[in-house]
Image: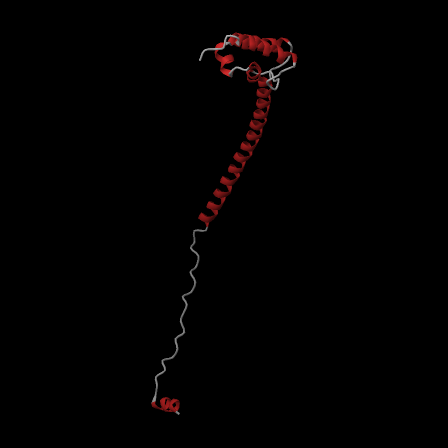
Length: 146
């Protein structure tokens, strides 16, 4: 796609508007995305075709003592990641300590089980009470018939 002939002029005008704080078509953030929106050009126009304008924009932002929003967000993300890393390190240390304690407990229980090498006495066999074999006699049968 061929760039529009006035693309560079629109980008320069958008740079001036953003740096003055009067952005029209963007949120006014000090980023390439906001600059591209303000100029009405695709973002890749600044990242591929007009690198000099992009670099000039960032140089002007830094010259004013301001930090681009992308850099501010990145620094905030770095702080969060460092905090998470410290928290994870603390948790990892605690987990390693817990593992050592659990291994020690397993070893103690294994040693205790090994020391109980005498088999447990087996319960006495149950004796079944058998009913006496009742044989029917004629006398008992005659009693039942009555």
